[in-house]
Amino acid sequence: MEDTGYHEPTVSTTTEKITTKTKDSRTKTLIYHALIFATGSSTDSPLLSLHGAHENTLAALKDFHKRLRNANSIIIVGGGASGVETAGQLAAYFNGTPSKPVLTLLLGLRNKAVDLPARKPKAITLVSGHDRLLPKLAPKFGLEAEAKLRRNNVHVLHKVRMVAATEAAAAATATGQKMACCHLSNETTMAADLFVACTGVKPNTSFLPAALVDAAGYVETHPSTLRAEQAGPRVYAVGDCAAYSRKRTADVYDAVPVLLHNLRNDLLAHELRLQYPPAGEGTGLQDRLEELVDKHFSPNPDGALLLPCTKWGGVGTLFNFRVPGALVYLLKGRDYKVGKAKGVVERGSNPYGMAE
Image (cartoon, rainbow, N blue to C red; front, side, top):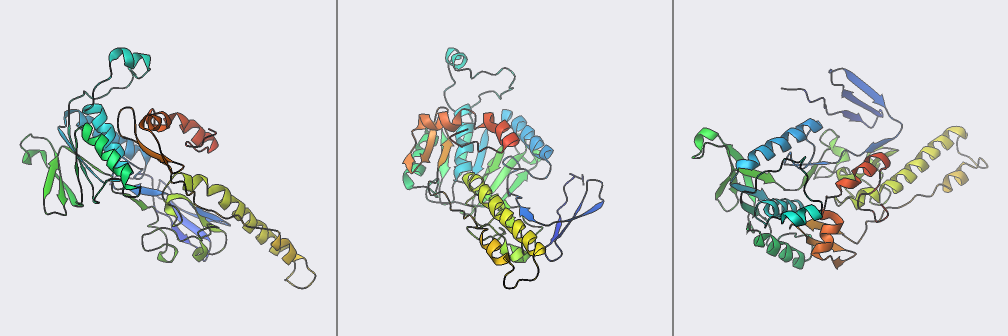
C-alpha cells in the first residue's frame, strides 16, 4: 500500500502528549500545554472532501472528469445541500441550454484554459431519503429546488436510501465500461456510469479516546465555552469535528474568537496559579482569576444557505428570507467563492463575510 504521509496520532490527555509518525515512519511525540481539535470531517465521496493527502482528491477529480466525458448516466445519492448542488451543476452544464457565444464573451464566462467536457446530455438521477429535498429547510425551499432540477431533466426519487454501492467490472457490462451499482432500500438496484455519494459527513476523530466523543464521534464540548471538558484543562474543539457545530461555515468563524479568548483566559489562569503561593487569604489570586471573564458562543439563528442549482440561479435563505435565484447566482453561483480563497488562506477571512 502506498504511504500517503498521513498517520493517525495517539492522544493522551492524562500525560498531555500526542504521538504520531512522520512520513518516513519515525515516531514523534509532542508535549502540549494547550490543545485544539480542528480535524474537520470527511464525506463518503473522495470528490467532496480530503481523504488523506490532497493529491488523493486531485486524482479522484481527474478520474471523475475523464469518465464524465463518455458517461451517459449519473446517480447522485443524497437530497441535502451537497446533493442538490451537485445534481444542479451537472444538469445545468450537460442538460441545460448552452449560452449564446456573444453573451458568453460579454459576460466573460469563456475560459480557453479550461478543458471542459463536451455537452452530451446525461441521464441524471437524484436519490433522496426523505419525502422532499433539503429537509433541514422549510418545505418551500425543497419544492423550489426540485422544480428547478426537473426543468433540467433531473429525475428525483424520494423516500429511498442507499444500502450499498458496488462497481461492476468493465467486462461484465454491455458497454464494456465500468458501471456503478446502487443497491437501494426498496430492494431495487440502479446502475449508472458514474456515482456520487452526497450522504453527509463523518468527523475525523477516530484516533481519539472514546471518552472524548459522543455516540456519533463528535468531540464533546461545552456548548458555549467550547472547552472539551472531558479531556482536561486547556483543551478545545472547533469546527466540523466538534459537537456544538451544525456543520456550517458560520459555526467556525463565529466560534474562533470565543475559543481564542477563553483559551487566553485559561493560559493566564495557569500562569497566575504558578506565580502565586498556595491559595490563601490575602494572596489576591482569586481576585485576579475573577477578572478573567469567559466569552460565550451562540449559534447564529439566521441559518443562511445558498444553493446554486441552475445556470443563473438556485434557491437560498438569508436572514430568514427567501433569496431570489438571480441573487443566489451573484452571491455564490458565479465562482463558489473561489475568488475569496486567497483571503481565507492568508488572513483567515470568512469567504461569506459581508465585509470581505
